Image 1 (cartoon, rainbow, N blue to C red):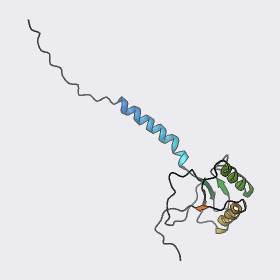
Image 2 (image 1 turned 135 degrees about the horizontal axis):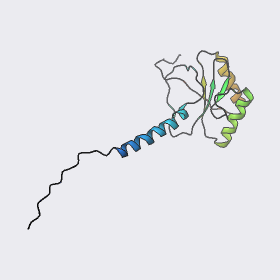
Image 3 (image 1 turned 45 degrees about the horizontal axis):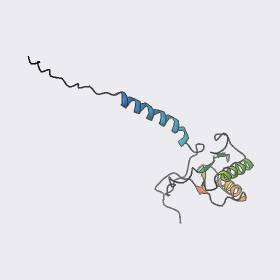
Image 4 (image 1 turned 90 degrees about the vertical axis):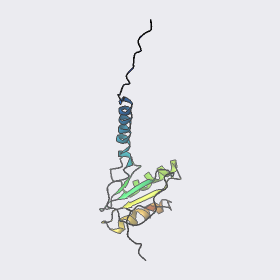
Length: 145
């Protein structure tokens, strides 16, 4: 006697469990990294055409100067708390002592007096920091001159 041939029907189901796992991992990664992308406090930056930072460079030390002239440093114990001029110099110097190749970037509010930005530059120069980059928003503005 021959056995009857059983036809197997193919299942037309998609196993979505691995996709859900991947999506949850991505969601967690984005939730953790999103707050880390913020550099300094919120200031209204001027616009200028400029090159972007090298992605392979170490994370920069970002100093923000708001329109009232308060200084904020992203490497401080509390990056959202203002620091005075001496604390600014000490915090930046300590960060550069750990990693001397870190770039120093200065973000100045476009609506604040220019003197506040110059004050930060003078303090950094007095501390022996001779290379400071200025952060701007990308824009179409032509350089003056």
